Image (cartoon, rainbow, N blue to C red; front, top):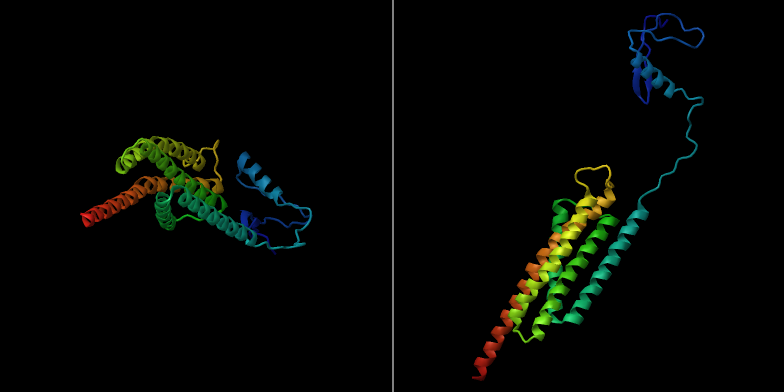
Length: 250
């Protein structure tokens, strides 16, 4: 009854061949004929044999695993990161006094800018992404430490605070620049924007590189510009108070 009718042969829900039945299939085997090239005939043979399984496939067991473990790990990592940042901020205040407090305020500005960038890009914070963010925060704090130590050296030499601040920022900039440029170069290699096959192409590693690179750019801005602005405002306010006190005594 199927003589002169087409019989479709599917593999993975895709039609491999749709031949016409020219004669009855009596012994369970048939020949597909037509104007095939040698390569086309070989390709069709491979496709037909690929679907020739000796036994039918049946589902023996099915299990669904949710992402609760990954969510819990991300939450714990975020909490650990917040605790670490809090301890670093406390150390800055205890060791550097009011200058450390200003650095912590600059770190708060860093956090706000970074979150805004993550919303604009957008960036999904995975475990490697959180690691990159925390590492960039550490580098931001390291920049402030270099600046403050340079300032302390200038103050020990008897220089006034405003001059010590200017020299401290200027002389610390070379070290900060070199360290951050080297890290940005590493981020570029890890992100592999040109899809080189001999380099990493993993999404998790790219997430780490992206968050670290963004954090470095923001930390350079907050460490050099924001912290210096806070110090100058504090210096200006303290000098105005001294002038007022001198005027009152006079």
